[in-house]
Amino acid sequence: MPRYFFHSFNASEIVDDEGVEVADDETAKREAILLLAGHLHDDKGEFWGTRPWSLRVRDETGRVVAVYTVDAECPAID
Image (cartoon, rainbow, N blue to C red; front, side):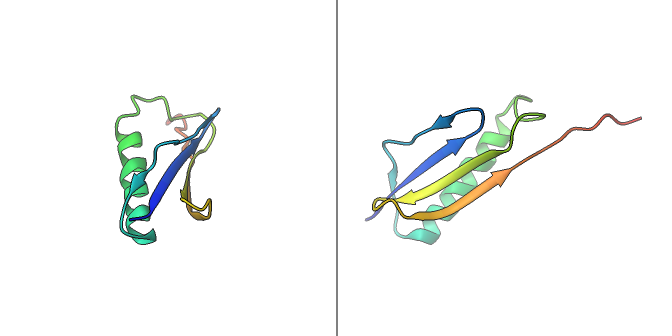
């Protein structure tokens, strides 16, 4: 099975040196969405008001399979 790597970017870059083996590009994209959702769920408010957060998925050859970027603001409500 091919190996995919999930690199994240916010204030700094976090490089995934280990990766995971999954069946194909589509499965890797679904894994990335689950990873992103988990990060946002467990965020404890640290995400709001920061730079956009990106997750880049690369296959074992270095080809970019997908890039997901999330940006959120929490405006004051009168």
